[in-house]
Image (cartoon, rainbow, N blue to C red):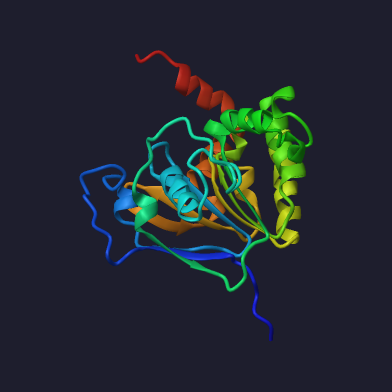
Length: 244
C-alpha cells in the first residue's frame, strides 16, 4: 500500500525548548497559552472563534514557520509594511509529509491589497490573470483561487470570505473543492458558515478555554446564522428594541 502525500502539514506542536513569557503577546491569549499540538486534516482544516481568540495569530505563525512573509503571498514575496509580528512561529515544531507540496500560498485578507500592489510593481500580476487592482476586492480574491493556485499545494487562508458576497463564497467553496481534488490541502481561519460547511473538514474552535475540535452544526457560526434566518423578524425586534 502506497503512502499518501497528504496532509503536507500533518501536525504542529510547541517546541520543548521554547522559553515563553505567558504574560506577553500572544501567549496571554488563552488559545495560544493552551496550545499543545494540532493535527491537520488531509483536505481542509478550519480555525473558528471570536475576534481576538487567536486563530489568525496561530495561522500567521504557521505560515511564517513554513517560510511565508507575514503579509502573505508566495514564499518569494518579501513585501513588508510593518515589523509587528509575534515570536510564536519560532516556538513551533512542524511535522510534515515525506513529500513537499508543489504549490503554496498564504492569503491574508487584511494585507491582500499590499500584496496586489507589490505584484503590480514587480510585474508578477500575470500569474493572477492580470492586475489585481483592475478588479474589485472580491474579484481579486477569486482570481487568486481560479488563476494563481495550481493544485498539489498547501494553502493557508485568513478570512478569505472578507471580500466575497454569499454567491462568491459558494463559488470559492467550489474552487477549494476542485483544488482539494487536485491534491491540495487547506488551513483556513474563517467566520463564514458557508465555507465551514465543506464536507468532512476538521474544525478547531478557539475560545477562552483553549482550542477544541468541534463539528459544523455545533459552531456558533452555524447556530447563530440558522437562528437569525429562521426567526429574523423576532430577532430584529429584540436587537433593535429600546432598552426599556
